Length: 375
Image 1 (cartoon, one colour):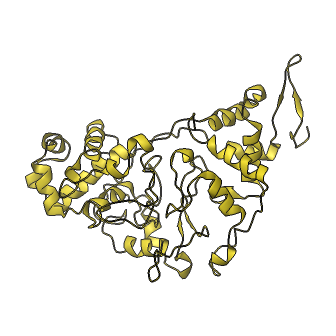
Image 2: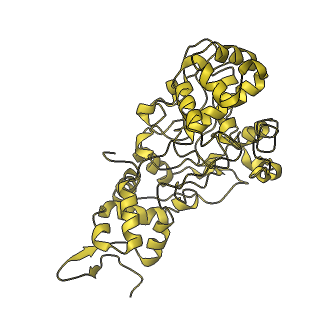
């Protein structure tokens, strides 16, 4: 059989025939984006990650302003469940306007790094930091302990973690964050039109695969081929969860820059809340090798974590600073990327694609199929 199915008609039973545009190699690459949803694995660093009562407590805390020092807002204020756990604003608004776009909270379980700059190596630490950061929820461990002991959640908290008054303030903070992350670890994007296509290809059910729009198939071919988007956006999450320079300006104003991964590593390597630290519930310290071995370099400056593309049509605007308003703008950014903005000592993986209007439309059509209909 020829390697190419492009524009070919695959003969099936009787007079039924179906078009699939992908080559055999492209089909194999497409299969690497699944299956979806992933299997759930308990987080060994968080002893309550699969505890139903902890998950319920985490959801309640997520939606309650008790986690902000003055009760001004909740986690859900910035990560709106009705808006794919993000907001439509370019940059997050805490107690002040923050420097970065609000990332969605779906598909977080099992990652190696968290946050645009990767300042956490586990989900409970990523849940903890906003609670105590001055520009966000602004609790101290002491004020959080008081708030939790006076809240409607005392009984649930103590049923899971023990008597609050017998715990130091930092332990109460860590335990609250672990309940939060138990909930966040359950947030997974739905199956999509792409998943139906991918699974049909795996079954060699080409009539079913042919229902996938040809424009999306052409976009997928660009994604895998000339666009080389798959270099960073790979695996079932469509992300390698590593850090790259996407050619987006990182100047905040005339005198300040967002250092990205460089500042994230500075934070990570001084944090007590890593998989190498004492708050890890896993005696085997699984995954701690990453923080033990990671090293800072100048090339980290201005690089940001690759976001997942699952549910991407629901999470505009895009990039770490929210500077690109829609998927069309994102594709055009990479089509005419200003390579002068890329680090001279960084990765040589981006160049102008010079896409045609049809190719831009095809790539957008493919990206739209990574979200649940009607997106």
